[in-house]
Length: 397
Image 1 (spheres, helix red, strand yellow):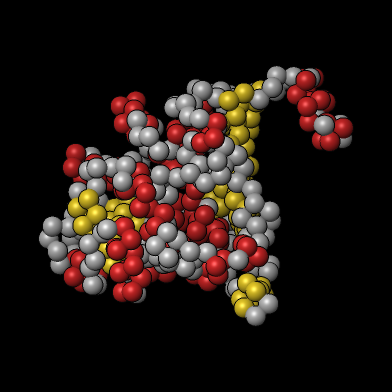
Image 2: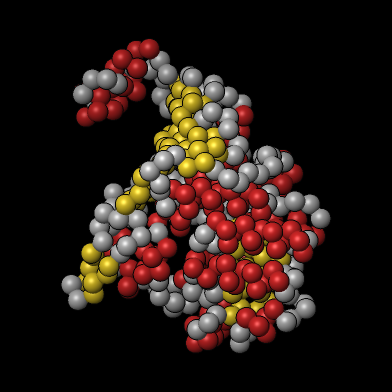
């Protein structure tokens, strides 16, 4: 599959190490509206330089476009690619409005093109392990989910100094403008929708709580997009998920699924190989955890009942990889889309599913007073078959 890459900024450099793991993906060209940035990127990664989008879309040898432009540009760029007859894999979200996202899906369907989007964490080992635990009813029926996607006061971490491998600056202003929820909520929303089916309603709250920030004393930044959201999402299966996203609270990406007999826990959704912890209830421990001393000395509660265990992972990896904070295989979704095209099968992250997840993220960020009635749906997804799992898990990354 010959691929054209659009957008040579900070995110593009994150994708490049992943592309090397998939020999069936050939980066035929890369371009960016900033030709100097594109030139540096192409030289650094030894990728053919393309002067502009029009030239790339006119190349009949390029089958698929990977859209890594700013979120606000996703609609315009993806639409141009689809109308040119190219399959598209886009960074999240599909677009910044639901109507635009729906239009893109309709164009792809009308032209018989394949269309998918990040995040591809659902194809990772952690998500597949968690999905297996849910299917096997490791904690009985799941009742409620608590999930956090807090990234702390990012502006205090010197984002104006961050540079990618090829030297592209981190566009923190675009990140703040798009909104932390639209940028990050899909990491967990995609898991929950895949496990428990389409969402029905969303009761959300959003606000910009820290509008006037300073990157440095001489570099002020004004934010108007919500930097804090929290939402309760009800899925068709009856499961309710409470998801909080912010750029205020300390870094926290934990997720807990609470069921009839215990809790499944993940500490980091940005690590494809993070362990899934399995904790069963016990009467003595349940009582002990109510005492303040067990908060100060957690080992006391662990002594009084079964200790949390690691649920058998779909692939065993080293302790270092399991506990790293940030370890994503960005190109896994691109790889699957390319194989779906070649095998004439639906991708594992189909367009209707990506549209649904996009709607959920947009509805949470643009919270309304009344509960939001979800408009989109998708065909049920299936976990990766053992053959597909073996193929991906054989990759030494």
